[in-house]
Image (cartoon, rainbow, N blue to C red; front, side):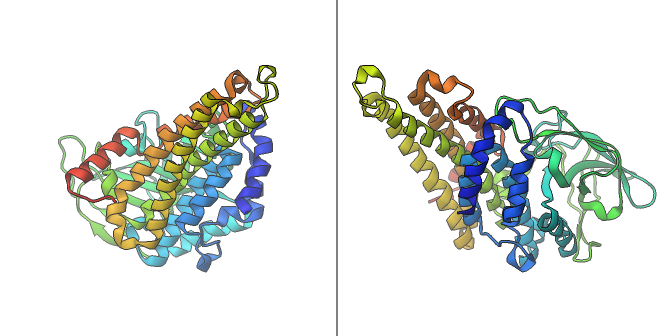
Length: 424
């Protein structure tokens, strides 16, 4: 109900923000006032306590109104949901260096002033962080325990409104290089948004470049750090994890190669991996909105040669709509089914892990097919900038560029099959 009301409101603003490529500040203000931004914060910590399935359902509905807003909200909610659940369950791998004190400080900002949270990992030099590689952003020790951050992050969704940013960087330490993640507050000295986002689709996500120019952070900003191998140079330095007080309490001495990204299978066996479904839900919502637009047009369009009949009575149009319904049912069954199983059957997560990649692949690619058929139903009218179907047609393609990309998703499923893993 909440997501539906918000979606209807956002739909009235979507065209204007899409045309201007502007960040929908008023949408995020509405999300804050309604409590939606706290949807996945555990109830024990003051939030809505939504499960993965509940959040997926909400995200799908929200995206029918405005995909750009829903995408940003999905990234924010998935981070808060994953970390909150991990802290309460004691799953330190999913917590990613967070402790309760730090999490409470961030969620207080979310609850009180609508602070937005997202990671900043992509860079022009390295491409998608899911492919591996060391960040070009550098963290230089300042001699007093803190660091100075310098670099540029691309695809920084919600950049104009971020209150907290998870920044990946490479530490240049005396013993070698370390890959690290820092929690940086929005608005600190040296951090600025450079408005570079001018794309065909998802134009209102505000995914501009974030420039870090001598940003000073203290030692408490470090979430994780791990030693990495440089070519020809073995490394034995380890990765520290942080205990409840935020101080290091364990060290792993396994070296990490900078060029190798973790496999999707290994990443999807943790409890927190299921929160990625919130992003797939956004693209399902966009595809559903395209379907609704095509059906409404087919009902209402009554050209003179048809003698008062709608084009929805034409066999060619019915075939297109029928194909849309099949594809949509496929997407919904897979996405919602996996989300439900992830919540209800934790003992099956090893088997369900690769299916997260399957859900993303199916929703994105079938979604593209759905919007294409919707455009065919609407015809030339759909090319008009005032008709929403052309926005859905453009926005849905952004899903191809979220990890796992198609080749990685398919390879994950193939390897699972070759290993004899039953996915059904």
